[in-house]
Amino acid sequence: MAQFANILFFMCDSMDGRAMGCMDHPAASTPNLDRLASRGTIFRRAYCNSPQCCPSRSSMWSGQYVHRVEAWNNIKGLTAQQPTVRDVLADSGYETRVFGKQHYRSSAQPAPRGITAWIRAAGIEQPQDKYAPAAELLETDTKHTNMRDWTDVDAAIAWLQENGRDRTRPFFLTVSVRAPHPQFRTSSYWLSQIYPQLIDIPPIDTNMHPVMRYMSVTKNAYHDYSDDQVRAIRQYYLAMVAEVDAMLASVLATLDEVGVSDQTHVVFASDHGEMGMEHRQHLKNAMYEPSTRVPLIVAGPGLRRGAVNDGLVSLIDLAPTFLDFAGLQHSHELDGHSLVPACRGEQTERPGWVFSEYHSNFANTGIFMLRKGDWKYIAYPGYESQLFNVDADPWEHDNQIRSNASVAVEMADLLRSICDINSVDARAKAYDRACFRQWRNSVDIDEYQEVMTRRHRGDWGVQQDALIEAWLRAA
Image 1 (cartoon, rainbow, N blue to C red):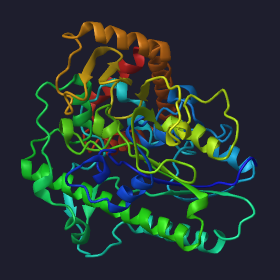
Image 2 (image 1 turned 180 degrees about the vertical axis):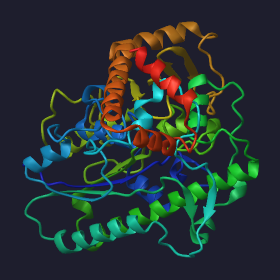
Image 3 (image 1 turned 135 degrees about the vertical axis):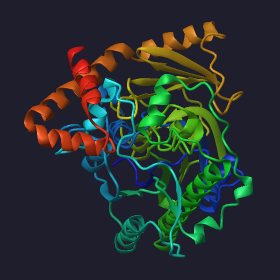
């Protein structure tokens, strides 16, 4: 072990990286995240590498892009044979402990959970088995509304209290909560901390991309919502973020209590964001800012305090960052770049762009995103691409793919240097077809009909079966 450095990685699920006071969000209530940012570096332009739980976490823990590890969807993640940075740290002498949600390994029983992801390219444009977005006030008036998360947080606290002091080897502690993953549920305690008059209402996207329209429909979100309904959903979401802030505070207070704060690096991040009714969507899955932007704060001994970094970074940078904290060499297999030099105020060479991809349900084709400077380029195999100047157009409504053709060509060329998007898309779709065929051949007609009906909100018949057969024949 080259040096003694504990690591606390606090991760949440579905948090828009802009939803913090330290990101100048006018309605957010995140005093503890703001305090952590004042102790370290906040990366204001951080992105996930896939806007869905399992692919994002698989990429983050492996340090490799989704298409390299073939973590295509929420049931196809890393295999048991694919190592993670946590495995490397354990082998090097760290005591690794995990409390809470993980979701980066492949599911042992993928069917029928994987069906809507497998048949996405069949183009069945109807709601899947998801609730329509709506705000729900819980009857309890308590600080503890996400009980599974608080149970995991309490377990992590108990472990630190028993094992944090007088250590002979460092720990790598992961606390991974499920909030603020919707549904949009909270109690009056947290809701009272968010002022609705400070919440902005996203403008209606009057020129929806066809893949985004498909996504909105399949999410059961393609409905008319009043401003008051949208405001309530966004207020409840921010209330859930406020509860995550309190969970983090409990763990950080325990580091102080056991006397190891000055020996512990702290990283806070989320696996992806939440659409929050922008572009008529909830959940994640799209490549727009609320879905792909994530919070990222890094603090600890030997690092700058109160630093703000506006460089483009992504979750794939965490694996080499954790290895740097441990004084370990990076593998040439890693696709990311350590954040430690930036956290120390040192010059560092970075590519100047970030990349994300998506191959799962709610999208009838693959989606690839490249952010460089102010520009974001989104490619959809089989459909026209999009180009946005994110700083000038934060709602991402002004598609400049035709009006700014020279930038579009430059971004397309850069994306092509990262991966062959058509080849990657074909690989993912071939996996989809193979999985679906295998499952369909394993069940009788009654079970097939029952599952397909249940996975599509009770609407399955001859028309949908015809789309399935046409999709299979097109292979």
